[in-house]
Image 1 (cartoon, helix red, strand yellow):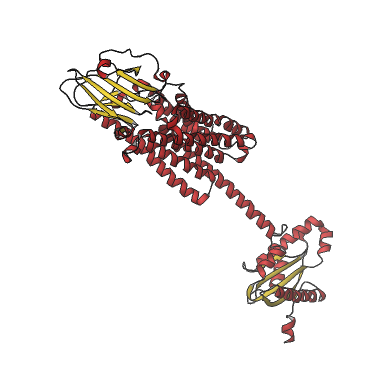
Image 2 (spheres, rainbow, N blue to C red):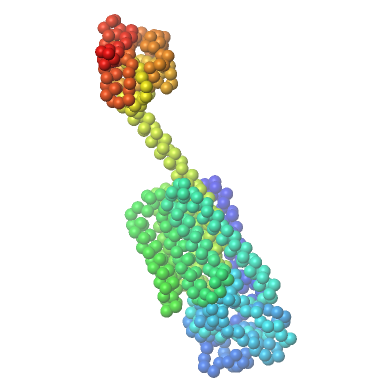
Length: 561
């Protein structure tokens, strides 16, 4: 395993242990928000009244799981309690039409409070917990009874019933505010960071990740109950529809992130089409639940859970293909997404009624995505680093190819094309010198072509040493070189001939050259042709005069003048 992965593994494992240790249903919230209350359930029948039910006129089921009872209207009775002083009754937020709380006191008085979905939102605390304060009476509270109307019973009829003091309620809100606030701050920081990176680097996976983080931020705002604080007139069932919408969109964005995070070769073949089908199914289920959930919430909830399960199962072939294709990012993805995928599986199992509902499982998305966000930032930073290295390597290769395209491969001087591009268009009078080696064919026959190549390299070095750095030096033919520099440059052909005579040549062969010089403008291509013809005639003069010398000519038009 990669060293960074080994370093982060203890953090990952410790987080899982903490969450598993806190996942007992009985202990999920009791430690910080109140005293858990055991409850029993009876299906509502005509004639049932709170006083008769408190007196034991109906048989309540205390053994079967609530989800086995289906949807409808129910009465839920608590075990006997005895609490005095100010208290609030806390229950988990669930999909229902209305809930009426009846509180029995020792003096026989019954206090009732009814919450429809709109009133539920106004009593919602952080963690999507419904808190109903009870009036203080001289007699102690002895029992609780709830009438639940229109329970969808997706996760239960009435869950996590607790009796808490106002101080415990405040502590619960503060603790959960730290959890959700920390996650929200992290999301905002990640959005700012990755959008800034995207503006510079423009990698698709950065936008997909930002979309996922934004939808998760919206999900946290809704699922935490903070949305009801900001918008007290929203119905609680509508708030939960927003939960499903934002969570579903974040799942689709997460799939898009995985699709763009790995190398394209990972998704070659049928896997690409399978991902499109799974993503489209998740998006369809999300929109269907959001728009039509109230018509048949159990059916759309089941469709949503199955689509979410498909999102999780698609991870298996993705990881397999990443393994087979030797993806560089497999270990990063597995490290960052291991815990979120695991707990998303728990949520799906809970949604399909295969696992007992739990406060921490219901809120595991926030906790796990906090961990994922931290690890994914590490993964994305590594991914950007790899891409930057690949980009730098590509640029170096491009520059090397460009250099090869502009350079003579034997001597490293400019080739004819690059020389002309740089020379034509220069302002002012220019001096062109054409250098041609004397009897180079004899040199090749004497020391071989490999030796001749070494001679050409030595000549190229000597020419570069004989002229200023701003001069253009090129090999324009087999043993023919060209030099262009301003006419007023303090360089004369004899200086170049002296440099060549002094240069040490391979095998100590004696190398001489002839030089033709001409001065004139080089603003246009026609100027080049005229100047080159002039210098070439001067070179012919040097050759005719016995070689190892230089000659100068004037342009024809100037000579005529």
